[in-house]
Image (tube, rainbow, N blue to C red; front, side):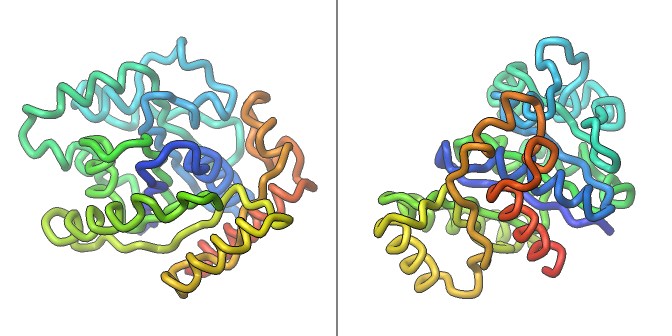
Length: 252
């Protein structure tokens, strides 16, 4: 059975989509069959692979609402072994439409049922909020990876997120587990970054990945070219960091 991993944090701008895209691409390089599900209405994981959000017929929105089976929503990413279920602005409507649906928290889980037999990894990119979409993502996943930006307010909201994950595990999805915290956007030249790393490792010890994702110009440029960092510049420090991180995920 494939591993279903949610990349989640209710804070925006912490590297969720960057991690979703590049972890998926690195897993494909490791000859794994990967399905990336873009579950963010902004659709940045979709456009990050050069897919035009405005010309997509079926997306995760249709799968969530039961309008189409998820098999009809899958597109090729252009990378061997890596498929993607795209998202666009329609997904915003799901925030309202799901509210009155039966078992609203399990719509994604039902939509992807059986897909873990076809893929080694299912990676789910999440929106920067803790609403019904994020609860669906947690209900459908087996593991959670939390990107955490190396900044002053890094730990703000993390305890709340962990409490929500515990609640979902207790009431909806007993298989859910926090795989780890990934430190992102690190500038190792600053004292602040060093302090954040020390503090996070002190509080969460073995739940923090050894790999640290640096601030890297090439990582920032890659999405505008519709490519993961491994295709845009595999020699960059950003690519090296994500390849090392992927090794940790594979060993987990």
